Image (tube, rainbow, N blue to C red; front, top):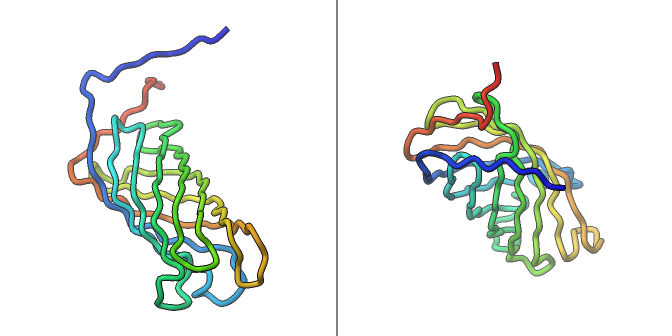
Length: 165
């Protein structure tokens, strides 16, 4: 038997954001092979669901198109209490390099609402690539850890669905 809770917001709100999301992977090599910067632009709906388009680099080794990716990222705010939110992000993207094409992502994190327009997020997860890494290994999946800074273009007032005393 399935019992659900159906809560509809009095005012359905959505808002646009931009985010800077650098992360560090466990790739082999120096710092520039581990650093992966990303910019994401998207829209958040009712403080619960987010869709974004991310443009980033898998590493900072060279300045060619080989390590640039474009990714679609749906995100769900799983649990929220006050200013803290647990996030779950999945993603599917395309890497423009010759060795890798499909990139999948699974990420979880903790988001903190610093102000109504600025949010911070600490996250970790995995990238799954269909292709070859620099060692010639197929289908590799580096783990990553990072942080993000979100700028919402209109103020948010995040509230949990349930009031906790």
